[in-house]
Image 1 (cartoon, rainbow, N blue to C red):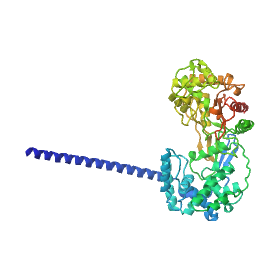
Image 2: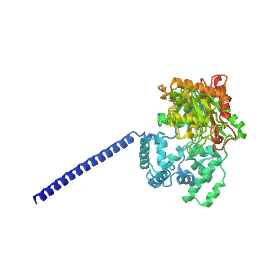
Image 3: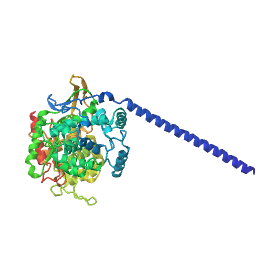
Image 4: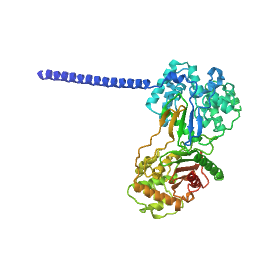
Length: 601
């Protein structure tokens, strides 16, 4: 009995101790949660305190102009000059507002600045597809983002966007928010607001537009540079058809009205003279706010663009593509840099009026063999020398059997010969020897920003890159092995001369050994003098590499002289094959013509 009493006493002590431990853990947990909540509240409070002057921005009657200037002081383009009077929703045809709301924010009149239903649906869709497929920003959130904040994609900016959306909903009526949106939203070709867009695209007031024209304007909101009538009338009409379908679904129009609208005419299209450099100007303009944030004064943006070189590069590309039309080549793009990374010329396509899509910085295309120098650079960094031998022998990796362009097997060849002749088998074998992970590491260091597949075919450039990135990567060879960051903005200042931004040179950061740079430069020089790049041969120093993707879908030439680095790509937007166009042909010829002109400047 005494033992039993002692046992019960011990059990009570144990339970009491366990209860005390649980209480302590609960208390620690509550304290941790409280600390996290306080931290979150303080951080949100900080986001709120650092918001821009909201009243000041709302009070603005026009968006300040931004003049993009070439390095010689000449104007390239002036954004913000195409503005018209402010129109209120009540002045517009009812279907104009209906088209916008049906397409952009169907619950605009019922939500509080944040649409929980749309957000939840978008999240589920994105999770299902395991990638970003659908967005859920309300009109109020878009006003908050476009008017008050920079384009930086940070958590802080997203929180501020929500806080601003809630503030706008509290402070303004739905009509006032809609008025801000309709009169400030960008609608392509330098136009802001639906009145300016109606005047430019249809030569009439937004008060007088028909249902199809309203649908075209609403359709532009998704991608102004792509869906405006100047960029492509049929594409604008196709997008308008989607808007009209949305209006039928939301019961704003009948199916009969939709069918009638599709037969309507659009206002006459004006012809606008493009002075050159518009793809470049658009690219720069998209970056300005990330340098100086929102502002209330007109500004000048001094850039690195060489206007003479730009105009010559545009003409050479246009003429060359036109001459090769029978070979099913319809598009091209190029970037020219100096050794510091300054963008001296950028051509995003053969005709800006027809397509404002910038293929130099937005398109993703397979580099083909123009990627091979990264393999040989990795080998040189690991101690190989140009006269070391690599085996150009048949390969069979789980059914993948690459071939050389000439269909031959060359056996043991030196690294310099393998690169000069762009041998696929030797390059794949060398990539396996030096390690594909190491190749990716050097490609990243040199400026490739897009994903690189760690697969055997990576050695043949079967992934996708940007034209700008390829120019940057080769620039790190041209400048002696130092990292290059591309830039276009030198200075930003107001009309009164007040400086808002001045570029400071980057600190030198060596990423390649001097011996590596010397060897790869010599090897790339041989590519032009006696290899696949003979059509790029110049009467002065030049080094570079050809590139052709499978089925002739992409053709490249990337290289450098003592003055400039240039990357040239040709192909088709729909990824259709060209007729036998290789990197050693048309792109090399374009590159040569540009470098000859550049040498004269």
